[in-house]
Image (cartoon, rainbow, N blue to C red; front, side, top):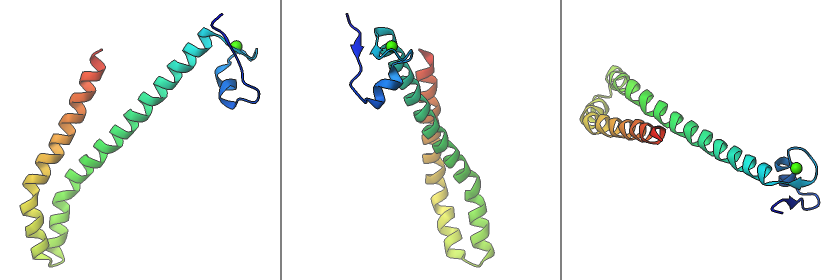
Length: 109
Ligand SMILES: [Ca+2]
């Protein structure tokens, strides 16, 4: 019926053919689609988590960067960083808000 035979030497097909009978049934096709969806979700979640960690560390390290610049006598660098701080914190807060907002939105369903 809807079952499909494997192409000879198909590497992808062998992964989908769970019981190894050389035929991909509807159920096996469905399972492989589910697995692909999960892998995609997992990948996306990982990327988003890495990005929010990066943003959080940036927020934590930013003040230290100002202190370090000041310490090494780079007064101009310190004052430029100070001037940029407002913009920086607002944009990072925006990124994080968008991230958590979109996550809450997609977890709703
Ligand atoms: Ca099979």
